[in-house]
Amino acid sequence: MSLSIIHSRALDGLSAAAVDVEVHLANGLPSFTLVGLADIEVKESRERVRAALQSSGLDFPANKRITVNLSPADLPKEGSRFDLPIALGLLAASGQVDADLLGNIECAGELGLSGELRPVRGALAMALALRAAKLDRELILPRGCADEAALVQGLVVREASHLLDLVNALQPRSDAPLTRVQRDPPPTHEALADLHDIKGQTGPKRALEVAAAGGLSLLLVGPPGTGKSMLAQRLPSLLPPLEEAQALESAALLSANGQFRPSQWARRAFRAPHHSASAAALIGGGCEVAESLRQMRNRCDLNSH
Image (cartoon, rainbow, N blue to C red; front, side, top):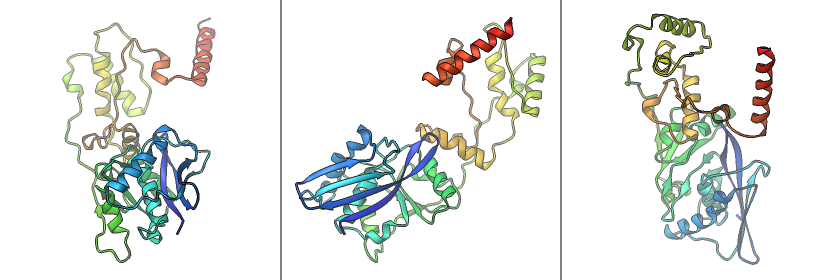
């Protein structure tokens, strides 16, 4: 079979858009072309995939004209997550794995030059998107990020540590299936900072309790050293525990940045930027943000008059 299609996903903020990795082998001048609005990291996967296949003892179709299309073509792709889908597509198109077994899986992973699979960011976002799509597919990820995806209930998540593990599992009538990862949400043992740690401050503590009970916004104003940050740091201890959907969304945000830790499961995020940080530093840059800040400043000036 000279054409194969592998299912994967690209990170787009907190969402993971579906991407079809189409691999085509044809006769002609040997080449390896990758198209589909891919950035430099994705295009560099050609060399990683080539070395990984050869180091693993697999055949690389060096005498073929290889075309890899990442569809949809108008969706930006970044990162090294498409190494594994591209490698599997080449193996399926050249007949080294059973292409019929690839239709019901989604995968992502970075390949080392030895064929080792390395973790990628956004495993939780991929799992949440796959569950939302209600597709009957298994999710295959490298060891190290598959445990994150297993936090999403209702999915079959399997892990692999080497490319050869996948090749053996995708052979006809294979008796070497990949390990299925099953994981319950980790318990939270770390105690949150509590209001009992603060002596005095009766009025501000009462304001924190009212804001937490009513879901209200809170503005703390005062000179440095009066305890504003100390009080704000203890606000999460007054809020109710995160529901599963909220905990997954918070964990997906941390996973997209590569910062998710099991000890942070179901914990409300707290950020303490420096007092000298500008509004643009807090919100982000760009023309749209600058225009929003300008309009906000104009409204404040009008209200002051």
